[in-house]
Image (spheres, rainbow, N blue to C red):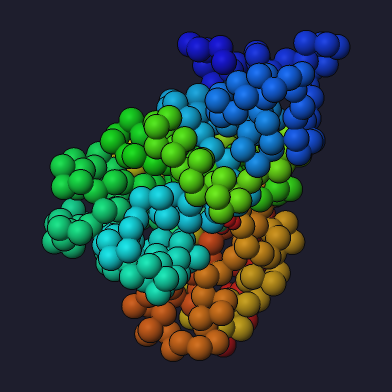
Amino acid sequence: MNDGLKPETQLIQDGPFRDERYGAVIPPLYQNSTFTFDSWDALDAAFEDRSGTPTYSRILNPTVQAAERHLAALAGTEKARLFPSGMGAISAALLHCLRPGDHLITLNNVYGPAANLMGSYLPEKMGIQTTFVDGGDLAEVGAALRPETRVLYLESPNSARFGLQDIEALCALVKPRGVRVLIDNTWATPLFQKPLALGVDLELHSVSKYLSGHSDLVAGVVLGKAELVDAIATREAELLGGKMAPFEAWLLLRSLRTLPARMALHQANGLAVGHFLEAHSGIAEVRHPGLPSHPDHALASRQLSGFSSLFSFTLKTDHLPAIKAFFDSLKLFGRGVSWGGHESLIYSPAISAVKEQPPERLRAMGLAPGLMRVAVGLESPADLTADLAQALEKSQAAIP
Ligand SMILES: Cc1ncc(COP(=O)(O)O)c(C=O)c1O
């Protein structure tokens, strides 16, 4: 790894991973399960050097390791371990840090499947006790602490409402009590937010979003000090089998070379679309941490060095046919889940809930029926805002 270089340079200069034999501009893909050795002693030495010499690809693969080294350098930490999905990384990290009977604290607005893992799976399988808090309220977190609290699990900005947590203040509050702090840093990427430097123990990502950036792979990563990440690698990753495929790591290496350029454009496009929506008469609220109107904007400006392009906004109308008219009239936004790819996407977290819940109950959950989550891609913001404008017009025409 070329230490001291800026991320834009480091991610393009593959350094030690360059193809020695032919000088191929892209490093080779080691698409193999096993590795062979000349002698008993050579194989024995390879087993001794578990995190340096590959013997079997569930344990170590050179292509996966190349991507892990880039990710660790980007996050400014010692070690990265890739997983086959973001949920694979999250579950391995939590299993490592918890024992039966432990207590953990997490957020009301944490990513849904992570909420299910912490709120029902771990309590059912391991007797873990989970408290959900706002996360923006230090006193509430302090009051939730118990002698058996072992983990504080953050996600800043969080899902759907994009509320922030003060990472440094929370680490200072809970770490003296023997609590490990884990954070899902997918929204910001390691480029725009460095939570490990603020005291966090483990930084987690869904690599399926901006890090891969092309909507063509699903992966996850755990980042942190070598001792802790290596322990997760030899226990949860090796024993439970959470192994990243070499081809996906090779695709990820391709994606990482353009991460800084893509994120600069995502940031600019996201803010352009956010400003457009905020000025539109059909919109009640825009929740984008990069906009001064966001309640946590001051904290966001201090804690983040840039903004990605996933945010939410709420249509003024509660009338379902008008909400659907907006959603269905969009031509340039794919209707679907996920985010962080080059294409713009739209999703309403209320899609399933509106069928079951009255508007008052959705509001209590922070989910108005007209709440839209938008992932702004790399298309022209002029085309995207024109598309939103025509869909908003259709929506307004459908209000009785
Ligand atoms: C904030 C956040 N964290 C984690 C995940 C899970 O990642 P994966 O789908 O790669 O398992 C997602 C997926 O949408 C997410 O939005």
